Amino acid sequence: DTAVSQTPKYLVTQMGNDKSIKCEQNLGHDTMYWYKQDSKKFLKIMFSYNNKELIINETVPNRFSPKSPDKAHLNLHINSLELGDSAVYFCASSQVSHYGKLFFGSGTQLSVL
Amino acid sequence: DAKTTQPPSMDCAEGRAANLPCNHSTISGNEYVYWYRQIHSQGPQYIIHGLKNNETNEMASLIITEDRKSSTLILPHATLRDTAVYYCIVRAHNAGGTSYGKLTFGQGTILTVHP
Image 1 (cartoon, chains in turn yellow, red):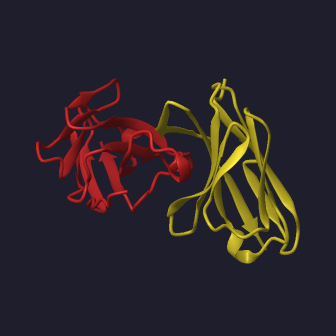
Image 2 (tube, rainbow over the protein chains, first blue to last red):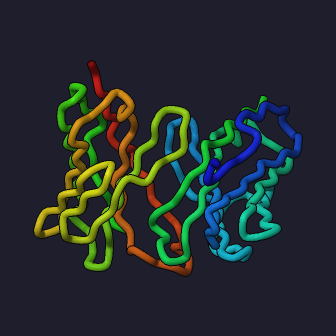
């Protein structure tokens, strides 16, 4: 069983569209995250949720809205997609007792045309 | 979190030990050294972490100098599947608040293991 799974793996869409990426973890973790890896391969945190509560929002445009229906799921909805949103988005999770040890999903490659 | 410096790339022959260095001269007393790697087209993978003592697990060994200003990740018998970008990260072990799970990734070291 995949510990952190995200769908879809690839997402190709037009500018201005709205899209969602889903993430689920079966590790029993309380904390989940979204990270973004840009074209230069820099990996940066976007959001952190602890027990369904938003903890970190790293100055991400409000077109990005994470939603956590329960502790095992953290979805990312993006409105009015822009060319600059093209990147690989990674979901991750960790235990409350060990915030430095993250388990990452395999990523969603978003291409905005 | 302290800044880290790693060589941009390294090569290693298959079956030999790969020693990846990391400088973190501004590390503070409560900060741990973490290593992650990212194999092509996959998400980052946790490898190991340590505070001041040397650590070993099934994947690698971590050697931290006595002054804690640098460390070395050792893959004892590198295989082709170890080809990846390796990231050295320092952070407070269980920093909460606005640091929940925040890992500051640098450029990392591209390790290429060749036959």
